[in-house]
Every structure is written in C-alpha cells, then in structure tokens.
Image 1 (cartoon, rainbow, N blue to C red):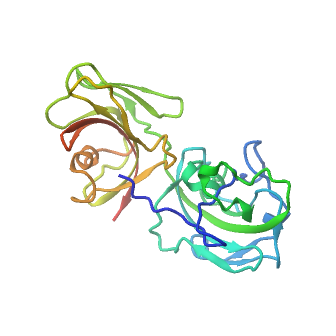
Image 2 (tube, helix red, strand yellow):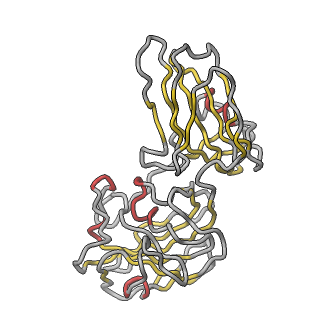
Image 3 (cartoon, one colour):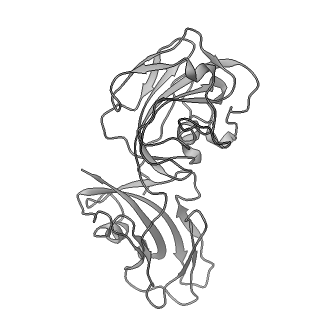
Length: 309
C-alpha cells in the first residue's frame, strides 16, 4: 500500500531531512521553530506553486533550525499528522546552488506533517497554513536518517545551512471525520486513540470466509471512483485461524510514514483493499476483512482525501 516516494536530499549525501517544526505567521507557538537570521536572509521570488528564484547570502550558516514565513496563506493550520501537498526547493547554504526540487509538476504526493519518515521537511510544516511559502534553515549536520533521532534543532554549534523553500498548497484531514456508525455483528472491535489511530481487537471466533466491508464512520466528501487516487491512513491486523495471537501487519499511524496514496485502478493495489475504498466517500472510516494468501486481515481505513487522475 505504500506508494509515497521517499524524499531525498542531495547535499553532501542522500538522506532524509530531519529537523523540527515550523512557525506560523505572526506568532510562534512554543512547539514550533522561530524565525532567525538565516531563515530571514532568504528571499524567494516567483508565483506561488511554481519553482521560485531563491537568493541567499554567500556562505549562509545557522544555529539550529529556523523557519520564516515568506508569504502568508489564509488556509487551514497544519497540525501534527496532517497530510499536506507541497512543492519545495532545496538550496545548499554554502554555495547557493539548488540541490533538489519537487519538480513543480502538480503531481507531488502528500507528505504527513510530523511523520518520522519526512524528518525536518515534514516537521517544518507544523503550525504553517495552507497558502504559506516557508523558508526553512537547518544545519547541514541535520542531514541524517530520521531513525537517528538527531534533529539538529537544538544544536548550539553554528554550521553551514541547508535552505528549504516550501509552498504549502493543500491539506487533508488528519483522521476520518464522518459520523460514527455501528459495524456488523461478529466484527472486530475498534477503539480510537486521541490522535485517531485505531486499536483493533480480534474476536476469538473465525474470520468470515469472504471479504467484507463495514462502515465505521460516514463521511460526506467526494465519492471515490476507480479513476481516483485515495489519500488514506490504515492499520491492518491478522485474524488467525489456528488459535495464534493476532499481530499488526502494518500501520501508517505508527510506522513513521503517515498518510498513503493508493491508486484505485485495477492491478495497482491488492484487490480486497481496493474494493474496500472504491465507492466510499472522503471522511469515511471503513473496517474491511481482506483475505491475502490464505490469511484474513482486519483493515481499518480512514479515507482522508481524493486526488483525481
């Protein structure tokens, strides 16, 4: 199900950006990085959503992560866990050269604010607003895998900066927002954490012999067709037949990846999963019993958005 491409940095080494969160315009919540001399020294001209011309002083350095709002948007505020569509340009602060861009093709898959897999690129979106253009400055030493846990945001050492100019184009809900519904009899029990992450309790009896879907939350957004790409979050738990304990087979809530994009044309994703999404609406939460290679799995799928082909 994981179809979101990895975002790599090409300054010095190929690695995921790591860092801390961004500030919103006008005020700086304590959980978000403040503007600083490095981020405020960045200028980016050009139309929002198009590749900008980025200018920075020669040999730009930073002490920790800094975020400035170059253009203030009027859209929704981005919170931890929010899937966001962005365009971005990465610039080497020591040379001023563009190292990488998102391509500005309008085809960029959403990334999830605060998700571990996106490090600073994702975390810097928190507290921003849709429509913002951000200048993010972070130490080059922060270019390490997010699994190291070293964000570089609290470093007291002045280092060469890496600059990310980010246009925040669109955001989806972080969780299914539909009206709660009752699942069918004999189905797994589902409870939700405050974040919306589902916990699934598998009953002691056997799973249905065929695939089933049950609506847990009824949304009112766009109905998805097999020509769309869905934006979802999911958890899947095995439903053993031999008395073994159930196990979590996968969860975008906990594996660091955040929201996933799922093409709904035939052959692009496991058919039972595809059938559990096609025809549902944005805002729905679906409990799906899916059989894969002789094993039954209980999926809880939050349908967060739709991307047209």
